[in-house]
Image (cartoon, rainbow, N blue to C red; front, top):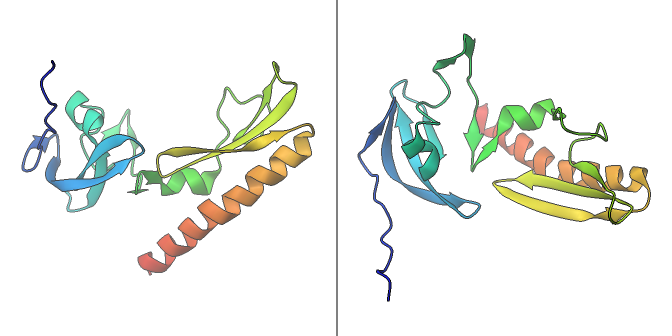
Length: 152
């Protein structure tokens, strides 16, 4: 019989400019930690990103000559939601909408707070886009309004 797994306690440990303050709510199925950066800002980071060296600050550290100052709340990047960036690999031109050739349908999905939400499959591209836009307003729109209210 195997040994019971013990959860790592990273409290008080330093990773780059981050000091782990306490456990945070999981991001999806991943364990996360509430951290304070040397610059004073606080952020939530997944265990793997801390231990692998992927995340070493709140975003205030220069990365490849570009200041990477991103704001994460509950595992969601505020700037990415605002930008509505379309990935290079996207073939539809609409974030979260892709063609599933094996089914002959357009699929709509949205990621929010570390979870992917499938919004359905549609025969018409326009219907998939409508589903995605509706989910953006319901999830991202509400999230951004609440974030902006807190920032004031």
